[in-house]
Image 1 (tube, rainbow, N blue to C red):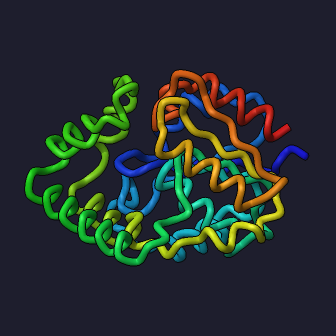
Image 2 (cartoon, one colour):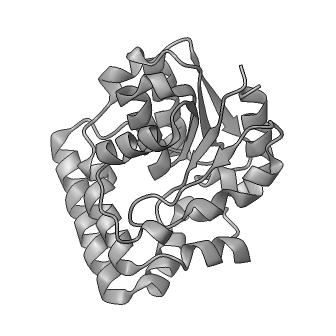
Image 3 (cartoon, rainbow, N blue to C red):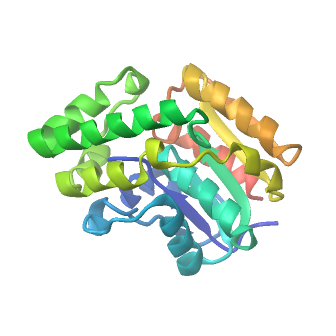
Length: 239
């Protein structure tokens, strides 16, 4: 069944407009929304944790297909678990259901706080250069459009996002995933070993209504490295 609408949820340091090339390539005739998430773009002054953001999205957009990349994938999982009645299809890309070990989670939370402090210290431009220099983004060609979208962010907004919605703040969701009954597509890049393993675990925990697709030649930022391939996957899944 074709969904009533598609809601696209971006990753950290991006913004809703990052999805424009994919929106233009999706072949289903369905309304598409791609909001700026808290701490980003037009929502730079909004501070919101994952659960509150999920609630706000469910109320704002209602029933449809929720598609999330990285941070947006974690938010999409929260929407699907807390408000399954509004999620007709779920697509998560290069994401996780959380860190199981409480000590590892605390370590990640401290690392996110340190990253937020550095961001406030060096500013957005320097931080983005450092962020995109990580090995996980090695295969991402940062286009003019990509750079312009990221440049709409503020240091204060991104720092607040790290502190309120970073992976270290998230309670693990793994033991709840079996309750998801909608069709689920998990997408990872062939070259992103960490998230390939997490993708396989997501499918194992969800069950037979989930499937995992690895996009050849892609790294972490699958939708933006292989926009046409990702749009084709979405279009086929949502028909």
